[in-house]
Length: 283
Image (cartoon, rainbow, N blue to C red):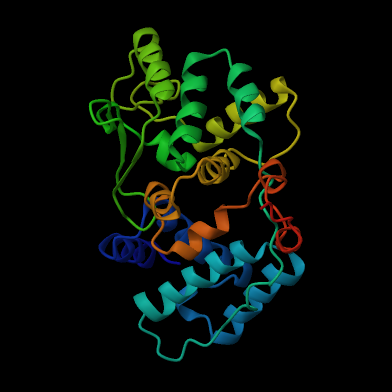
């Protein structure tokens, strides 16, 4: 992609109000296509674009979600930016198989928080779990987003460019106040090495993995596990699905249902309908 086309496409994405991370991913996708074909992207045919997508799927064996980002980026570039009506390239449908998240019990979450000695890291993990935040939301919080008088956390311009409020746990507030007294954050609530730069997502992930290792917890995957746990544990405590949906910032209740996988301890308390059929009736 020539410098002129790169700048114009980037400006196009800005005007389209594409999120910063999505914009970077789209620009990288077009650059990857050009590097593969050795030609500017605006000169490539549908067949050449399809060849690149097939290479990514079959040779590089990229995940479906990654290929979907590439596909969306190229559709945006050719159909949206260049205005090609004849853009006909595709990727296979999403596979039907889907892994369930590996949930942690409340005790396992507690052990992870207790294993974290750094007050900033402890506050970060507690807030993500206690408020059901995405890691990208947590690292982009500013101090004024913590509304202690209402016991709410304001999340601005998150996924889908939506603002929302979610719950603030009293314990999270206690930890945040302790963290505030010791570190005095300025622009960003959770800053990196420089107080004028927010903590990176990679650093937040590393914080979680280190805490999990210290706690001896082997279940679960990345830091997003805490968001899954927040949703499932809230459901177990009797919080209505609609409230959880609002806290998580989902548009559809169907998306929320995908997060709510009950833990074995909760499932063990549920009686089978067969038992109810044969339950003795006491006079």
